[in-house]
Length: 255
Image (cartoon, rainbow, N blue to C red; front, side, top):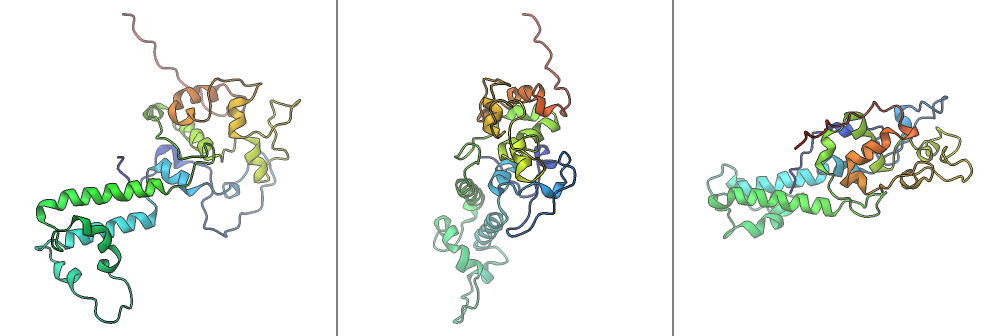
């Protein structure tokens, strides 16, 4: 089970050109130049995609985890807050307490209403694992795959930052290198693939891997399972000429 951090942003997302805004927020008017859209033009990416890429818990889930762990810790008989969290709330239930909101989560780990000191570390770990599992299972399906995405292959960390950024953008379906996306934010007059003038087809992520004029044996799932191979494909693709040259690994020494 991966360790979930609520704060760190991985290098692949540090320059992800997406606009994160609350529901109902409006975007700025398109730039006068269709080839250089401003940062605020980019459509809102899926929050589930960003949480999966960052390996971060949503704020509500993370705060609930911290509260349940604190309640479990306070239910140890020798904890300074033990008397506070075990005091009856009184006849008027004006608002929730730690006990009323999170006792159901902590209760399976208690013995006669208290947490034994010998069970403390194990309980904190199990609460973390349960919160992460529930959060992962509640994420929306990936818009490219139509189902929950797999873990990204660790080989991606060997790629330059620019390639990791492009891969993350493609996995979100919000990539400024694709005409369909530029068209959706009014930064392009057409959504069609420029490599297929005789057969106008929207240039989506799926088309990127099936375009007959830029053939490849890769498929969208390879952005997760084989990111290095996809990066090599992008390095020679006409849409990604702004990417720096991809350095090839040194040849293996002869036996």
